[in-house]
Amino acid sequence: MNSNTHRIWNVYFINQIIDTMADGVFTLDKDGRVTSWNRSMEHISGYTADEAMSKTCQILKCSRCFGKKCPSGIRSCQILKEGKSEAKECILTHKAGHHVPVIKNARVVRDENQKIIGVVETVTDLSEITRARQEAEEALIRLGEKHRLDNLIGKSHEMQKVFAAINAAAASDATILIMGESGTGKELVAGAIHQRSMRKTSPLIAVNCSALTESLLESELFGHVKGAFTGATNHRTGRFEEADGGTVFLDEIGEISPYIQVKLLRVLQEREIERVGDSKTRKVNIRIMAATNRDLYRRVQEGHFRDDLYYRLKVFPIVLPPIRKRKDDIPLLTRHFIARQNRKTGKDIKGISQYAMRVFMDHSWPGNVRELENAIEHAFVLCNRDQIEISDLPLEIRQPRDECRPGAIAGADAKKARIGKDLSKEELMELLETSRWNKAEVARRLGVSRTAVWKYMKKWEIPLQKPA
Image (cartoon, rainbow, N blue to C red; front, side, top):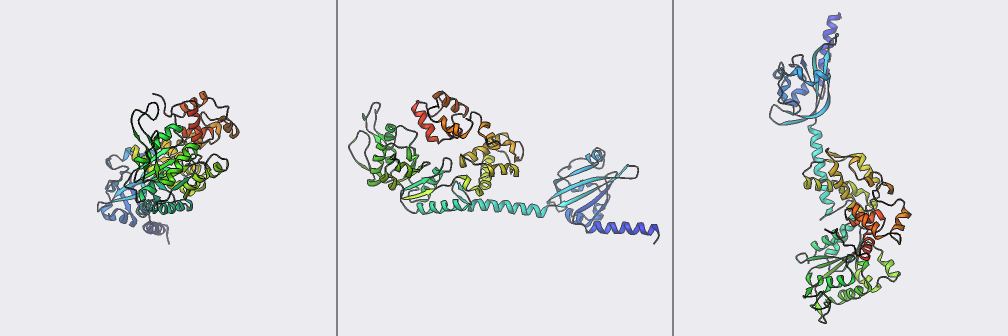
């Protein structure tokens, strides 16, 4: 075989290889006109080699360059300037008119004198991958629906047990005690039970028992008659009466005083109340659900909570697990909060990077679901990409050491000490200011419960909301 024959054979062999490639391959001359077009390009574009030959690549209507003049504009094309084009996803338009997602790559071809003689481009069809992505997204949506009960989300075994308990509680009229750390969603559980119960068409009224003094809480729950106390210029219907036929949710039940405990016990036993300053007994048709982040049984043992009230409340207990005990739910919750923030802000953030997710999975989440939601909201303020990165996360999550938290008190022992006799009104006011009057954030910085913060605010007569 002479050299010319050998050269012809090599060219034929190379063309055969190119034609059998799964990726589309085509070449352009120095004027930007097609000089070769393999079989995969015919399949991807819908144009035969004969139809494409001598045309410009404008027939593909690539989303990255469509609208530019070719071949007259090829001299200004970046491929000639850079010598190559990095692989990027784009959209081509098929001859039939539909769009084809692809990865497009290009390189210039030079002669022995390094003069550009043409361009070779490869096109990878992403149709199947895109279809798989869509199916995966749809599966995630279905998964979210499957692992969702109203506003509660979780696929973990622990949360599935909670969902089963909610459905069981909704089918009865029993008193419910919801237990869990701050931020775990106790009020959401109460709402889900009420909405699935026979009382769903009647009101659900929530009362935070730790946010009010004993006298105010009594009036809030039971109501009062005109002249019952100084300032009682009118009759007032209490929450128990307002909820007649529905449900009363008593949050932070472990903080009520012994006097209120006695009055609540009567409500649970007799389903009747007396307004403050009145001797008339009134029947109420209500269901009571209570919640606490305290160990009520220990409170009973310590003599701070009546045992008979405890057992009246604990007819059907539901325990909400903290995030650190159901970390499988973090990706699901993260997707949910990102979708919520996208709707709220109008942004289109696709998700969170694997490195940021690793930080999420390693974090202890002392503020639980509420802290996670706040972290996503914080990230949305900073993120100007389509993906949340570590740099978008709050400092205390990126660097969870106490000394990295603005206004925090370094060291676990120091934090515990601050809530004792050493914490002054001025220090608490400063923390409230730096935390924008977010009591949960103040509690996290001090390493205590929100209830403890509320108690100190009441002690020093600090209003619950920032003064105007």
